[in-house]
Length: 369
Length: 211
Image (cartoon, rainbow over all chains, first blue to last red; front, side, top):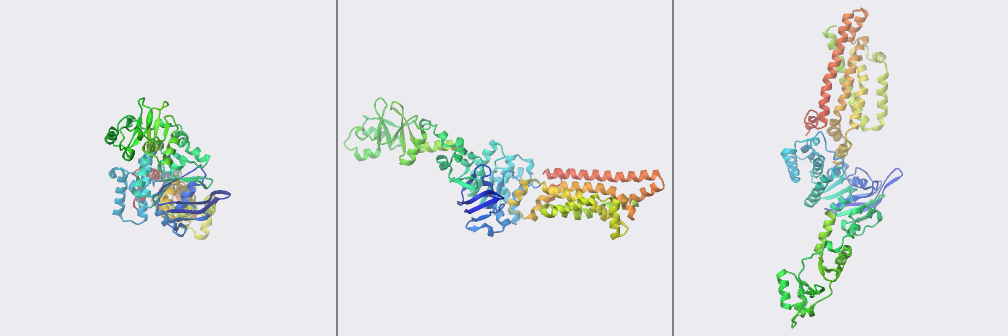
């Protein structure tokens, strides 16, 4: 766990960080974001003591990092930077093994690490291990930059706009790889970016900073839903709820629904449920207008002695219009505990339903395309 | 002009450059590592360069007496400027991203210097040595005035005796040495620069040896 306790930093008159306090739990992907000059990079570089705070303490796993040897500390923390910074006079293999070598690992172990690392990102050892950085594309170089940071399996990896200088396509690919690697290796990652799309895609927690302070620290979904200031909202820009609210219910409702006519018998109704594997069916009248729902539970409890399902129909399920606001619909599903809402056309005929599943799908599509 | 004088001349050049490198390289590194003494060092080295050669040799002769030692010290002092300057410059201009990565990965200051910064700065350092060496070939002519011998002796005699043939031969020898050194070291320099960019050429081996 990384913990900042009232950390301040000033350069001359300019206050860079102002009593910054936060915690990043182990295994989390934390993204620092904010306008330039907000102190995000300074914050990052304090974790491996490239920059020292004027006031306050920083703890890693409860230990004050000030009491540790700088050089040793840095060897135990991975570091990836925007300029990539591969050593041009060393091969890929030598670059990956910089920290293992500093830690005095023997040659076989270093070799094994190079094999494992290259293997992990699908770069064949024979082809790449002997290459020099300038013989590779920017994307490949930064892949090696990431591997170099991971080589000695540090529990924490710091990344300072690592994909900022890459073309959008390569960036996407590397982001995906990074997310996968983090899941697989369970690292604590602190990542600086100014690209909200990147933050939303990668982060478990987004730490939004402005003028050396935290404006909002929240998971991506929470930040999308409740941006705490207009600045956060403007950063969220096209990713924000603003766009989502223009999506209407019909954009993500399900239309293949099991319906029965209100005059049908109970037996027929239960058989239909059994065949389709559902526990509730939607009841409509002759004109296909929505009447209500019948669940298997209702039939069990009150179905004795009835012939048709008409008396059992419940009208408790929430209905929305098909051109209704998707956000309201989502809010309702999140807060009410209901598993679905019924979507109606203008003439009250049945259009479809929205389940929690379809909601999750729509959200993930909006976030990650 | 004899072969002996030519060897003498080369001997003076080589010894003075060795001395200049031995002193200049550490000074350049100190300038890079510690900004405070940098200004003082640079100023002294600059001033040395402005003293006329004969005057400088004269001053040294007061302490070291007449002979090769005086010339070698004198030319070494002259050679300091390009070597110190280029060492410092080469180290300063190593890609900041590479430097930051080295720092962030936990390399100590000295490890960084010897394994990353100096190997990458070496092509520019070598350029400084090349300039100094070629200059030294010319400066070493003054050796004869403080009893150091070399091609200068032959030129001086030729002028006194108005022996144009000898004068031409001596001067030609001087020019050939200078041009040959410049060309040879230029070739090495070129391959170093390519090496520093990471091609599988020379230069790469500098740090690979360590690996």
